[in-house]
Image (tube, rainbow over all chains, first blue to last red; front, side, top):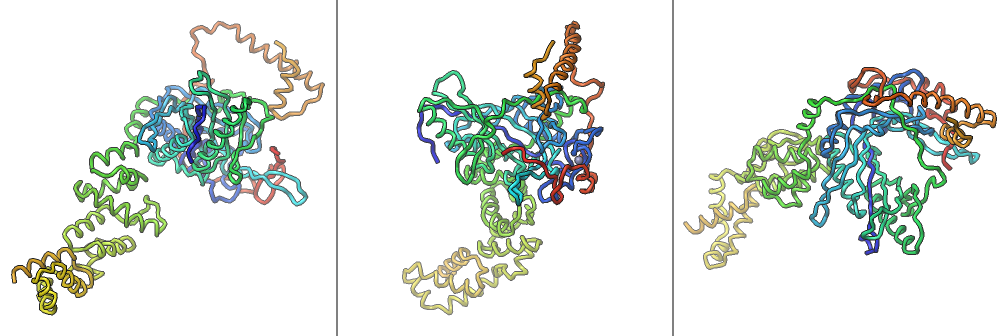
Length: 488
Length: 95
Ligand SMILES: [Zn+2]
């Protein structure tokens, strides 16, 4: 959906929460996975907020946050700490959330967002910090109409990374692209599963409008409850319309939090009566400061993988792929790596064939088997061998597909699979005899051909293909037939 | 330093504590007294002293990312004000 031209400039900033992919929680050894777990089974005195317990930081969660911050080009301050963010709500067992306030793990990063028109927009990243997730609430109505909530503490204390952008985005579409690319990097670095539907990637948006050229930002509205990239874009588009219409009528925008109602395709005011947030942050007295050693940061810096965006550009340049194919091949990371591992065996000259197999038949099989690329049951060496067999014309495009299916489900080498399936082309000597037989058996076609009907050779090719049950390479058969007919 | 009645009520609201008029008066005095102590600290010249955020000479205290058994669900729910199945049941906070 495109935006109608308006007199207002749209200003958007995003706040993303991503669950850090650790085995245990942020400050206690309970399992950090909550999806599918029976309620309140991943809970201990620490995440339950019992008196007298002591939280201890999960080093892996800190390391992954630092790695991700480095991938976004952030600066890592040499001194950081956790703070208590105080608010009483049933999703907080302790009455406060351990978060980071004025000394976060990282600041001043950026993300270069590729826009559909081919331009690149740099979006500033204010900070990336770490905090603990809250418990899950479900709101219920009893038989007598009484309303209450039920609490599952499993999620409480899971490590949650907060990524705050600068208000640098100028359209809902830019916001969506930023989110898509942020998710790519989260997955590439292995820092988060970053799946919005699973709830481990969440986004809140701040949006304001101002007249073009106005020096000050307009009043900003915060939008919550968006459950997909599509709903983020739709909610922002809705807000652009709502706020422009209000401004057109000379009305004031109220600073407030609004919730996106997916079914009704609109936002509604939430908690407008509530006073401004007053969290009374103070340093967490149970957690010593974090002062990452320079050597640790440098060691992490070199482990930041080549990011998908860089890879895409390199694939185009180095292997002559189209931008479209390079884009598809660059994610997930396992596929990009599979591509280059195959090329390491098959040679860069076959990059296009490798790309075609990966994006075509292999992708199709992968979908049919409902497999993520990470768990694919085929190896680069097998694909390289398959390409080699096709190139040497041992297999044609049809038989190669059959061989791929066989090795995909049963493993083994393509050569062995082709032989098992009886798909290996007839050996050249046998083929020669067969051609002679076919020529002898089709005098009419031969006469037609010699009489100048070039197409008549197709009848002979067809006859050979039938005799070999399709295993012969049709182009090769045609070539050999032409040779033979010219000689005899 | 003296806290106003409104300030005490605001803090009580943040903490979700209901106060009687007598409570408000009592806490006005007590909290003001605490602030006086900090006012005394503030008079100390701290020029050149770097701010501290933690009282002990510790930094970078971690645990490795290893899962250990959680509590049995009956223990988790033992102190819950009410339960529904294996969930904790609470009053609804938002409308
Ligand atoms: Zn725990």
